Image (cartoon, rainbow, N blue to C red; front, side, top):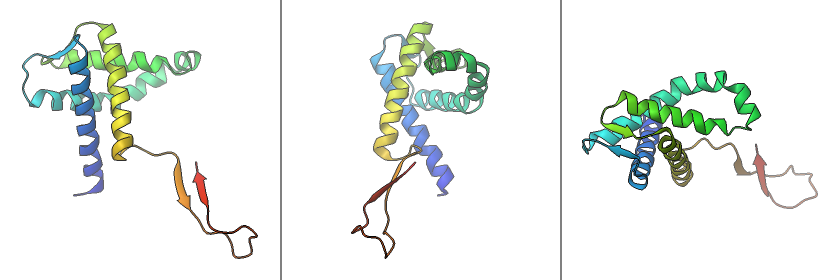
Length: 146
């Protein structure tokens, strides 16, 4: 399996699990038909919107994002989740506030699962490097690359 396809499937499964957790926790989010395909389709549409629409919304809302120190991202995520419920009749979000809570839960669960599985984009890497032979320090300690 190609690495790009494997990463896509891993992220899709993680998003699906995060959506399932949010639906099971919050009474304002639910699936209408209860079929097995609905959570996968919901997370796929959410992922597509996050990939294509979210960057445009972030760019348009840049002054608000700067002014709120990034907290407006929660509103953008909630709007996208609410838009998914508008696109898919099998997924329902009762109000914007449920969408806000749902997007917060989906984000936290996704980050936690990405950290646990190692599929997230790591920005900090720990590496062991050997020091040059003329160095007066002993051993190759950890080096943090940012």
